[in-house]
Amino acid sequence: MGRAFVYVILGGGVAAGYAALEFTKRGVSHGELCIISEEPVAPYERPALSKGFLLPESPARLPSFHTCVGANEERLTPKWYKEHGIELVLGTRVKSADVRRKTLLTATGETISYKILIIATGARALKLEEFGVSGSEAENVCYLRDLADANSLVNVMQSCAGGNAVVIGGGYIGMECAASLVINKINVTMVFPEAHCMARLFTPKIASYYEDYYQSKGVKFIKGTVLSSFEFDSSGKVTAVNLRDGSQLPADMVVVGIGIRPNTSLFEGQLTLEKGGIKVNGKLQTSNNSVYAVGDVATFPVKLFGETRRLEHVDSVRKSAKHAVAAILEPEKAGEFDYLPFFYSRVFALSWQFFGDNAGEVVHFGDYSGSTFGAYWISKGHLVGSFLEGGTKEEYEAIANATRLQAAVEDLAEVGRQGLKFALTV
Ligand code: FAD
Ligand code: NAD
Ligand code: ISD
Image 1 (cartoon, protein in one colour):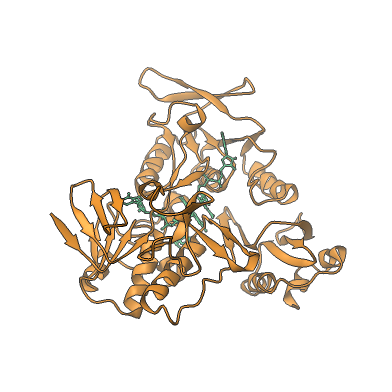
Image 2 (cartoon, rainbow, N blue to C red; image 1 turned 45 degrees about the horizontal axis):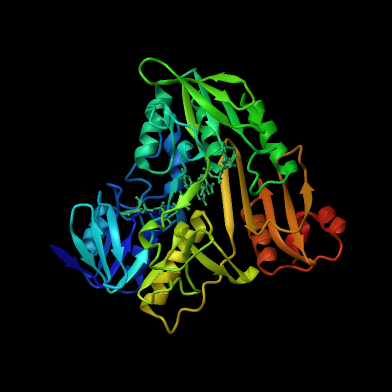
């Protein structure tokens, strides 16, 4: 049994939604494009799951956050795919791929063949078991990657009002979920191995601002240690968390955010991998001419830095997906993907943006006891990265622009004194 399509997108997450919209903008005929997704719903804006979805009042629910509302573009409901003749094969896992024969085999036993494949399989959450701790299956231990996880997190949160949550991990999931738990009136303790939160991006000074803010909301931090085991009750629910430093924390629920692994396994041994992802060129094309990779799973050349990177943020996902479609449909017109890395987060009343690379020397600026402050990263006399909390649209655009232009910096202290004025006058 089998079906054949000209274009197949494997994975139905953020990248798939933006690629589908781009296909229709550039011209695709009915019946040519198919999206296969393990998830039972049409592509949606995954970032909403740790923000609007977790609000106690008027939470975001599908269909309100189907792609591509996150970029203020059309909202693609299942009806939209039908009207555009795009086949959505939902709730279906692809269990093997053969890039030589150009076929995918689904868990339901169907063979789907393609002329061009776009791999958009994203990533999976790392499990505690991968760090030698068991207990992930307990009903009050929550991960957050997809809609099913988000629904179960909401259910667990609702059963824990006024109780204690332990958040494992001090990265994006940890920080955004901790804020949401507080808003849901749950007492939060965050546990992570590093000396400060968001260690992959924040400097100690930036982290200290957010940690103080979280503490003012009642969040407790336990740093420099990790979870070693759980205590369970007779029904298998976690009741406490044991830490490697010997302490024990009572827990009505646990949220785990300890990083991700890109979903590359279907293609290992068939396509070239690099830095944990599927290696692509500036057209998002893999080592096989008929196969493209986009989003979290792709390791692509970042022209600005002259090296390849694999990013895990939605702006690069949206833009890489669109660029791949342009390269497929209009190869002679599409140039090389030229991307300025952009990360952001929103927690409580706070909101920050970061552009570029956090490499080189750091200069902090602005009022770290107020609400607008930032940092510049300078390498070899040029601006390579910028961070800003509490900025206006114009200010964010200015730091992005100055970073893209890699503005020259002669005197670090002077740039610190000028602060935002430096970016605004580039
Ligand atoms: P995904 O969106 O993960 O989609 C991959 C899809 O492929 C899934 O539907 C999956 O089920 C499917 N799939 C995988 N393997 C198979 C298979 N074998 N067969 C069939 N289907 C398969 N980034 C930001 O920049 N800002 C944010 O505020 C932000 N918030 C986030 C909040 C949360 C809770 C999470 C989890 C991520 C957040 N991110 C954020 C990161 C961002 O959502 C990801 O970078 C983005 O979703 C990746 O898009 P993708 O399409 O590559 O993969
Ligand atoms: P992350 O990489 O941001 O953070 C992982 C954290 O895990 C580290 O900061 C560390 O504190 C912790 N950790 C590592 N090993 C540990 C161990 N053995 N025990 C305990 N803690 C350990 O990953 P995440 O927070 O899990 O986020 C998952 C994905 O979702 C990432 O790709 C992230 O970019 C994405 N996401 C992004 C946003 C955003 O951009 N605003 C928001 C939510 C999620
Ligand atoms: O980029 C995003 C983001 O942060 C969200 O919450 O997309 C979503 C949508 O805006 C949700 O509706």
